[in-house]
Amino acid sequence: MKKLLATALLFLLAVPDAWSDPHPQAAEIQAYRDTVMHGLGKSMKATSMLVKEKVDRRDDAVHHARSLHGMSALLCGLFPEGTGPDAGIETRALPLIWESWADYETACKKFEAESKRLVEIAESGDFEAFKAQFGNVGGSCGECHDRFRAEEE
Ligand code: HEC
Image 1 (cartoon, rainbow, N blue to C red):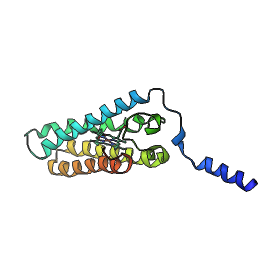
Image 2 (tube, helix red, strand yellow):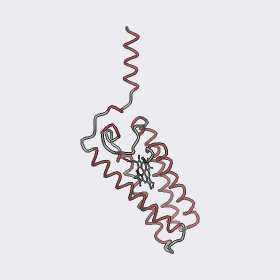
Image 3 (cartoon, protein in one colour):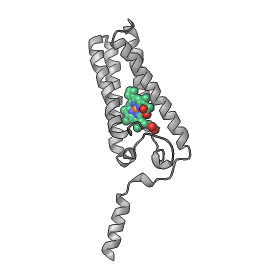
Image 4 (cartoon, rainbow, N blue to C red):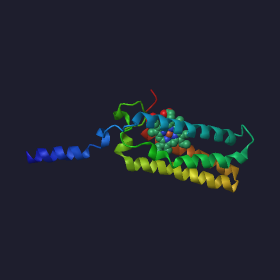
């Protein structure tokens, strides 16, 4: 019996926050983070037009870089507990985010660091280095999505 209790207790401790109460504004927060993410997507798209030299506006690079880096500060805060699929909302955020919160924070920080480096390079005016670092920034979006975002239905 003791053993059974201990097992039950262990089980309870091991079950992560998947059962956390829904956030009172879960749907609104999800809509907000979706909008912020789409903003990031547009910034990346605009920057890629510079990088691919579809437009001859290299001086814009630093502004896009600052915008991406500025938004990176918001990222992890867009995912408070209780805003995952178990809150009964439509979302591609996987429960793994809250189960492995430290890893998720590492993924947010990776994007923060890569976009910071992008700003520094843009300020230095080395456009070839900017192109290379832009790839690393995109990679940090992709790494997080691969691990923490559900496939599109
Ligand atoms: C630390 C993790 C993380 C990083 C870094 C990140 N995203 Fe996301 N992103 C997510 C998650 C999780 C979702 C799903 C959110 C939801 O559906 O509630 C998402 C959703 C999106 C969406 C909304 C549409 C969709 O397909 O679900 C876009 C667009 C997007 N991200 C673009 C980007 C871009 C561009 C970057 C980099 C500049 C980026 N993201 C960086 C985690 C991240």
